[in-house]
Amino acid sequence: MTDDSLLSNAPLAQVNAILRERQETLAENLVSFARLLRLADLDITNGRVIDAARSLAVIDIASREDVRHALRACLVSSGEQLPLFDTLFDLYWARDPQRVDLISKPDTRDREQPASAHRQTGRLPVTATPAAEPETENPGRTYSAVDLLTTKDFSTYTSDDVRRARRLLRALAPKLATALGRRRRNSTARGAVDLRRSIRHSVRHGGEVVELFRSRRRIHKLRLVALCDISGSMDVYSRYLVQFLYALQNELRGVQTFVFSTRLNEVTHLLRTQSFGDALDRLANRVDSWSGGTSIGASLYAFDRLYARRRVSSRTVIMIISDGWDRGDSALLTRAMQSFRRRAFKVIWLNPLLGHAEYRPLAKGMAAALPYVDYFLPAHNLDSLARLGRTLVRLARD
Image (cartoon, rainbow, N blue to C red):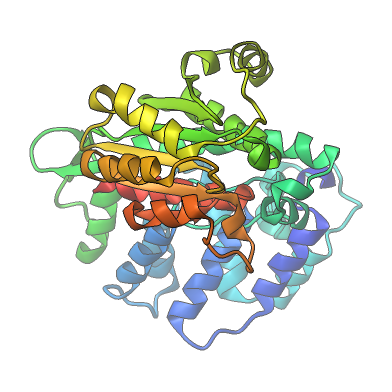
């Protein structure tokens, strides 16, 4: 394996810092170890760390191998990860200074080193691939360039930012769809064997699996109706938000998408294309009010009058994306929001301006809508869309 496939310099510095830290309690050390695993691209959620902490409470923590096996059961999700986990476990818990130096200062003389030598050198056999982590239970740890992009306001993007953001947006929706669909519920008699839960439970019996737990895939009936403002005041944001809706709709069943400015247009069928470029062409040809004026109240009232009876149920989340600048009749907006509150499971309002510290929801449209909103969230950058994903995952569990 060549040095190009090892962790790059920035993550190596982070790894080295973690390995040299000295935590005071076992819980603090467990959290630091989880950070190290995340840097190595293992999918470590907060739930798994909690499970690991519980397992350590019922074993002999004076035995390093018992600790290793307990953490393996809770933090490793596939057999392919075991060699990497063992290497990181030895690096972190042994605290051998020579091994720490090896990982922070790799020897460039053995470029064709075989994979079997990783355990001897302490190198991490990990490819450094930047990634955004929106849809799991833990906020992802990414490289500095990606961190800057995910926290950067859409309105300040350069052309290079736009290209990279499109890649991250394409990756965001599949992860969210996976998170919404992979939740399972416990079952006593039927369903596949829940190996992770069975192994975790075996820790209490010295590692002996005495009971097999089963689980069945949870049936999700959560549906999503998205109403996106494409008026002129939203122009710098709507292009990214519509792309997010495109990716989400093509990954997740039960998503219906509408856009509005001075009038309402359903675009669910227009977004069912192989590429976002094709979808944009179809939108340009069929939606003639893009970047125009805005009439939020009339548009939402039109949805309530024409579609809500058939499209909205007690398991529907209505997601409105708008800055709240309404030039129309706010009484219509109030009537529509009251109806949404009665019909829908939850009402989410995403406002790009909410990402700015000085913003106050004083516009008449926003002030009229807020009393009927369950979640008022920002939508100005990639991190805010990741936060939306976590909110939807929580709602799907209810």
